[in-house]
Length: 72
Image (cartoon, rainbow, N blue to C red; front, side, top):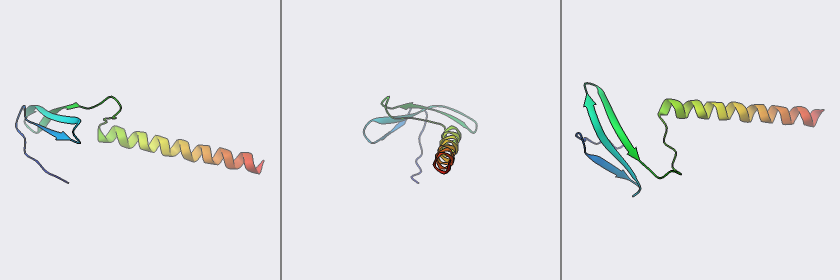
């Protein structure tokens, strides 16, 4: 993990096409802005993990249905 210090209105660039800017700092909360191409999905980590869990459950259900169909 790369740890960087940034102040309000400072930014960093990832892969030449993603910009992360510090918009506001209030106590222990930091508001960031992310500029990225539309084809690059950007999620909060807890949302991303929920999507991954849902996809895994759907895949498992699909595999179970396929196995049931195979066995008759």
